[in-house]
Image (cartoon, rainbow, N blue to C red; front, top):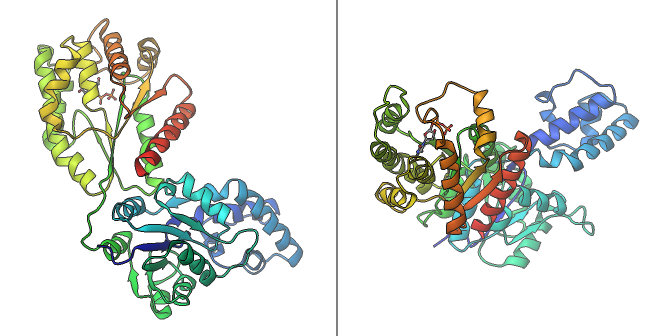
Length: 428
Ligand code: TYD
């Protein structure tokens, strides 16, 4: 049972860290108006006070220039700055757990509602929210207390208001509900205590403990990345990890073969060019052995802790390389891996699709080949054919195919859009 069935979150400093958009837009306005030599770090003082005041008092502009600077700032903020946001690590896991336990969740913000809606959607929070409440065109200057009241009227239930500043705490108190101050945002613990917050949490984990108590937590997500040698997997994996982190996931990265110390030793045997005499069957068992270890020591514990696990290659690599490339049969290799994974399969598999000729051209420019990459004529073609057949045949909802033969930026954006879509669908 949850202590609170309706959970209202302030946005800036509670769900998201918005300083980049603010400081960069302030820097842009300063430079555009000839006030050079300032730094993003120094302009953090812009978070909180009214913009006009900051340009005047902190930068030393006269009234007219400060007014103009406010407009220049807004131009950049409304097009670029609003998206220069990061969700605090662990927030997505918390929203998932709250939703799993039946809570109604809303954003109650002083930011214009349209921006809050855009941010919630772009950063993957929207699927968990019952409402997003902020000032609209009709009530531009609504106070926090009015916003909280509106949210309460809409959602009912036993309400708690969570925020990083005293205004959030006061907004909750004005409506007679409990409040939680979060000291990881833009206020201080002292400010929140003086305001009389019911609880103060120093971290997202502490906030989760207050809200969830003993209630069951949601599991994380498991995302694997697949593709032929040379498809650009490493670069795209890094982009994916960064993307998930910005969206509030606590990310755990692993790769196969490998994982913990034991699995890394198996990796060493598998990739060593000196092991020319290794039979295909031995190879298949070794990949499965490394995987069995990785699943139990790395992947499952991270999923159970609510993290996003990104695994560079998983069972499908064995199906393609040992089943197809080595000719052991895709169905047999899938069966051989059953015990290794014992039901732990990815929620999403990113398949970086690229035909072997294009991939070869890329690999020729790259690093020294390992044992698998030296496997001879037709090997990569058979791997590719096996991937294609496997993914086409099973009609698996988890596979997201991405055209990997485009520019790096285009591959990244196609991949991230598709992954976001899948993640949103998992959240509903
Ligand atoms: P690695 O250096 O990690 O290459 P990549 O960046 O292409 O993933 O080496 C992994 C090699 O092992 C790669 O050639 C694919 C192969 N492999 C298999 O043959 N079967 C498997 O089950 C896995 C996980 C990898």
